[in-house]
Length: 195
Image 1 (cartoon, rainbow, N blue to C red):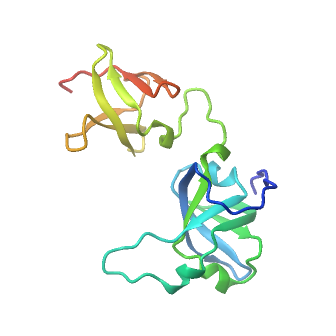
Image 2: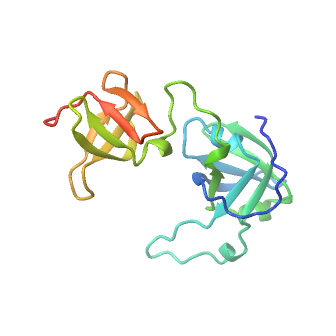
Image 3: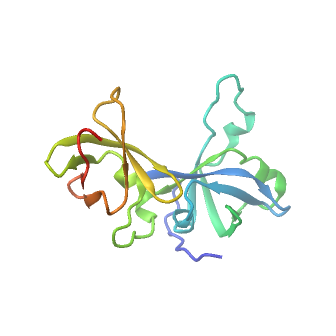
């Protein structure tokens, strides 16, 4: 089990800084536990908050919305959460049987960005990098971080000068990234215009 603080605030207002971090896969066991698929390899954002906010699964073309979505709670108060293989299993307060846990299947889980653990020196959450402007050593704007890719060895910045322009793929490693300044919204890289 991973310890986390349990905020005393009782309202279920969806946080303005909510970040989608996982989705409910299914029930786990018979006592109301749920099995969750975290979007990050290290699910510390899930463990950092005992209040998980829910949204229904995204609609898919040709697939009818589930009726249970109308009764989907907006807030889960987590009693216990722990890693289980590549997934996370969690006990939710007020959910005590398998049927209630199964009703959450497919729900998207959000936690406030403000509850994420503090990143270490030279560590960054992807969500904080998206939207930053990327400049090369000559001061030329290469574009904006549109997303990131995890290739197993390291992350790769997907940089676009404009929405329809082809993207530049820049390895997010010290050999190419000189500086990340979240305060100014800027990343400086050693990257040529012809790369």
